[in-house]
Image (cartoon, rainbow, N blue to C red; front, side, top):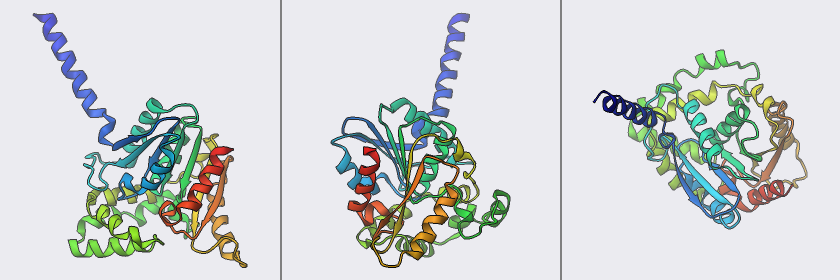
Length: 291
């Protein structure tokens, strides 16, 4: 009887521990195709559907894992005080369990931030990394003297910002914000719908964590080759590329310590590069994967 009781308590403990650490809570995954693993992480408030065209292109050559992060686009939110660190660790475990030879990790926006963060702590987890318009420390892009300490004070209001908005104001704010980051407005309504289905606390906390986490020194630990893509609204062969070079240099400065990272612009695109200019995006990805 005593042995049975001990075994029962053991199984209860195991079940509770497994439930508390189950990676499915941090994101949802859809898997398509077969071949080397390709992991696609979308940005804030977006579902994995932002990668629809990417999935269609690469599912014939790769096993494509398309994620939607907890709290975004209708996926149940995490209840933990911090969110991005929990997602980051769960992503690392999932990738470790599902990677193959010639694995590639692609992240957009906050997804790109998570990709470089988890790789800085788990180098050689994949064979190549592609960052789609994300920076190691976004808060200092327009404020070079910014530090994590200053940012935590400056962006503290972000934690509750979305929770304090009424529904009409939230919808208007999100439409304006997304429209400013998108060149092809055929995708605008769907992105706004995904945003409005996102958990408000998650939106605020993840933006706060993004703005207050500085990865510029941490990425020095990454030895995996990386491609960093940023959007540019004009054709790249414009006669005057002065402004483009200013933007590229600001990105290169942030990525300076990741020795194997290369910054490349994709013309006729904004923040959602893979939606604005799929052909340009795929050309850059294909060239990098072929190296």
